Amino acid sequence: MAVKPKVAFFDFAGCEGDQLQVANLEERLLDILAHIEVVSFREIKTEHSDDYDIAFVEGSITRPEDEKRLKEIRENAGILVALGACATIGGINCLKNFINESEYRSTVYGSSARWYSTYASRPLSAVVPVDMDIHGCPIDKNEFATAVKELLLGKIYTPPDYPVCAECKMAGNICRYEQGQLCLGIVTRAGCKACCVTEGSFCWGCRGMAPEANLDAAARIMEDHGFTRLNAQDRLRLYFGCTDRAFNPG
Amino acid sequence: MVAYIVYLQQIPELLHKWSSSYDVYVPTRVEEHFYEFRPWQEKTHIAWDYDLAYSPLKVFFMPPREDLIHFDLHNYTASPVIKKTRQLLFGVHPYDIKAINQLDQLMGMDGVDVNYQNLRDNTVIFGLEPARVAETAFWAGVDAARVDFGFDLFWTRISPGAFLVRVGSAQGEEMLKMGSSITSATAAEKEAARRIHLRAAARADKQGLGFTWTQVPEFMNKFYSRKLYWREKAKTCLSCGSCNLVCPTCYCFDIQDETDDHLKQGKRYRQWDGCMLEGFSRIAGGLNFRPNPWERYRHRYMRKGKYIFDRIGELGCVGCGRCVKACTAKIANPKVVFSEIREAIKNEA
Ligand code: SF4
Ligand code: SF4
Ligand code: SF4
Ligand code: SF4
Ligand code: SF4
Image 1 (cartoon, rainbow over the protein chains, first blue to last red):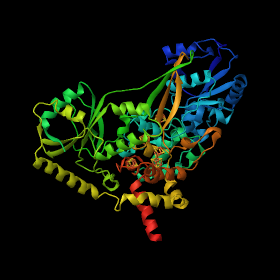
Image 2 (image 1 turned 60 degrees about the vertical axis):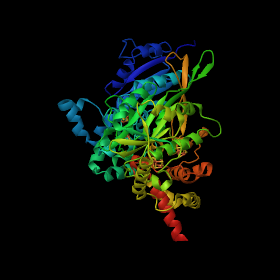
Image 3 (image 1 turned 135 degrees about the horizontal axis):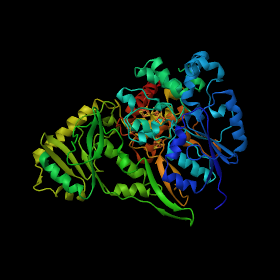
Image 4 (image 1 turned 90 degrees about the vertical axis):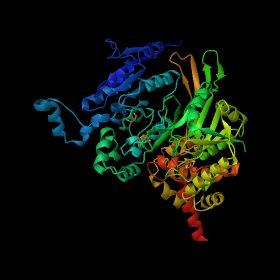
């Protein structure tokens, strides 16, 4: 076999849940590791190296100094992959973008707030070009495995671009709207097999907005089903905080 | 017409026998107001009076995701994967039988779809006269209240404790005769079943189109170029594809490859796709034949109202009402679209 590509994992503001999902692949991870060389991965090893071909980057960018580090990673890596919602769409950290700065600073850092720098949360793509997205909060470990295999075969994995509803239908779920519940699957990018709906919940929007999402229609639909603008906004801000259109739904 | 009488208490014995050679599926209530075909087990409560199975029955012949080929990346070999599961669908309404009859024709045109065909050939269908009509259904208006073929047996409940069972195939009759003391139906019992059908059809007629379906293809043809109409209708379309995927007559799919974790073997599978999804008509180079939601929206109705008719002489819609329910935007309603177009044309004339 050809030389194994060197792979490194990095994290910014996030919970490391995505890297944990990778570690959760367990035996499957061993099979995949036969094809790659991991030079840096805090979840499973202590050594680190700056010589890598593929960088998987988790977390969102929330401080000016993050930009420098991310640009260095971009410089080193042939392929940069955004791992998880924080990295692909800014994720749940973007909730702070709706609160005024002094408030979230003092909430998080208390009296030592002035020692810490912080700014509006954003996805990696707001700072550097990203080659591939693995969406989700957390990512789906199977989708991660698929994406890595595609890379190894010389392809860039492209996640589905249609709304979660399509996968929800394939899963045979009864639509939450027919049960009187709010669900963001109508505007969220699929690829998770509508797992939250299948498990009895609803879609929270963690994979971000589908590229062709019709937000005006979504606003109408939510309203027609008896949900207020505020219900919808609260839900949308959870994950769609970094999409301009979500700041003023409808 | 050969017909038998089966009493309710004889059915468990029959189901037992059938289930030894078939995967048996029956309509069950999955929650208040929602029904699905589920595997029959000893304790399963059959919803004889169900109005509509939430999921389309095409899941039994072309599952949402299905392997087609297994291949080897090292020695470049490939072999087809063809499933021949023997299944019995017990309790299928006429409109759903009509949808399956359509798929049989369409999947057999221009080369047989072997995966579909093998599952279909191994499936036995027992029809059932609908006791209720779903709120969103309009099957009586699109010639789907009755079918003359496409079933092995057809069951009509002629009294709380008895069914009249019409024979549709030798296999069906043989399966029925596995029961002890199944008697032939009398002329009076046949007449009772006929009346029950007429009553059911009359109930369903109240939710018909209000005009004869045969006019639809011509209307559609005339309205194809009315962009304003289509644009307005599709304004709230989410391009979610739900209306395609739940439709018992839609059969489109996408093909993908996937390898195992050793990068040695792989499989080619197909997965449901639909013309309302933006990527469906995107081709190499990023070009898209129908880039706008309204073009996709129009296309779906042209398929339902005209293109399928041109191929097989029937509308591509059996009026089950599934898409009407599934569309959260409440715009996927063939009955409404056909009727609006008819009105508009009438007013212009
Ligand atoms: S439950 Fe949510 S994801 Fe599923 S079909 Fe309904 S709106 Fe779409
Ligand atoms: S259903 Fe929605 S919230 Fe759940 S994993 Fe999928 S995109 Fe995320
Ligand atoms: S178009 Fe709608 S009503 Fe007609 S057969 Fe398909 S799902 Fe049923
Ligand atoms: S209506 Fe669309 S999805 Fe359905 S069969 Fe026709 S082209 Fe395919
Ligand atoms: S018509 Fe309705 S169900 Fe169909 S794609 Fe548009 S929004 Fe989805």
